[in-house]
Length: 442
Image (cartoon, rainbow, N blue to C red):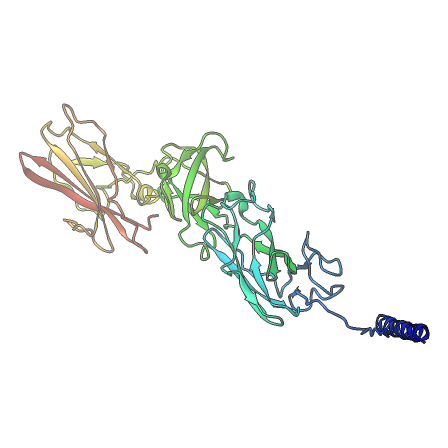
């Protein structure tokens, strides 16, 4: 019994152990399950620039070189046209021309927009050469880098300017500028986009060349220089002249007026009787110049002589006596055939029947009058005067050369050119007589 009882007890213990073991094994083999959520998409934002709708075709995302967009783009380039290119008048040194670009962020993210200057090119259409340099043309913008929200538009001003140092060869040239706009995301490794406006044309003006005419002055030993040209848009233009011997404007040049500025209507005095040619140069600022055509003129010596005729009924008879002046020629008609020019030295030839004393002087006064000559011409009517006082023996004939007073011009219409002669002896003045020649005189 005890053995049975013992055996029965051991069996019970074993059964409990098996039961415990069975319970433990059931826990580690419990059921499990897994659920998947499909179709969940995370979409990146976009950063993209545009002007109008010029950059839309073929682009989905932005991008720059080295940081391309999702669709492989490295930015957009548009050709500036009438809408986006500056509509400028021709510029000269000191001028500038501006355009405003409306750059829109058509992406879904905000970004910082900036503008810079890239390379630009120039086509020379003037004299000499025009290089691409800051001394000839500059392009800039006052726009500061600014954050532009998604869907917002920024107005970006861009200005092209011609410095006063612009070279002469830049006249008529055109500068073609490329303006880059770039937008960057929150970090340097974030999204970015680039938009370049190309073909923005800035045109340089051309200084008008003077149209020059050279013609003999009323004083045929001088030359009148006149020119035309429209310089209203070039205020402050000055002019200088150059004179050449002969008619081809070649060889050594002599500066007119010693190289100082002259105005249209300038009277040049070459100093000899010959053919001369001229060029006038227009100067704007310190660099831009324009040359006139070559104009020619021929000067000649003044050989006209003004005579007084004592035999004319129109003259007062001279005093009688040993000092009576016998003027030549004696024919009044021969005198009126002569041409007397204003601002030209006039020659008077006197023939004496007998020699004046060596201590006597003879004074000649030329004046003008619309009627009878004045016995004593006033300053308003006096043209010129000269006193002849020879040393030793008087010349016969005696020659007076009288130069008209500065600024005197021949009055219009028929006038009388009058000659008054007087002699002086020991401060006593005796009038020989008055006479006149009737015009017109040129």
